[in-house]
Image (cartoon, rainbow, N blue to C red; front, side, top):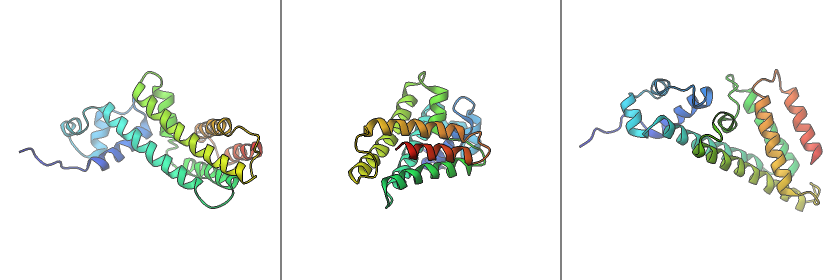
Length: 192
C-alpha cells in the first residue's frame, strides 16, 4: 500500500500558479516549485508528471478563475455600458493593486510560449474566446436595450474590446498610475 499524499494537489496547483504567474514558465525552476509548494521533487513529479504538466494545470486554474471573475462583473445589475466600464476599471485596480505587477498570466503566456507550445496556446486561446464571448453577450444586451448602437457588429466589437483589454494589461505592468489606463477605458466607452 502506497504512502498517503502529504499535500493537497489543489493547493499545490494554486501555489504553483503564483510562481509561474510571477516568473513565467521558462524562468520557473523545479526547485522554485518545490520551495513554494513545500514538497520534495519526487512528490512533485509523482503528483503532476512534469513541470510542464503542472504549468498547464496552473494555467487552466488561472483561466477558469479569471474568466469566472470577469463574467461575474459583467453580470451585475446596470446598463451594459456601466458593466463594461466597471469590468475594465476592475482590471485596472487588479493590475495596479498587485505589488509584483504580474499582469495577466494568459497574456504573459501568449507572449512567452505561443505558438511553440500548442497546449498552452490552446488554453490561452480558450480564455480569450471566453472573455470575448462574455463581452459579446454584454454588448448584445446593450444593443437590445438601445444603450449601444444596434448597427455595430457585436462580434467585431467584442474582439476589439478583448484586444483593448490585452493592451491594457500589458500597459499596467509599467504604468506609473491609473490615469493612462483610465484614458484607454474612456476611449473604449466613447467608441461604443
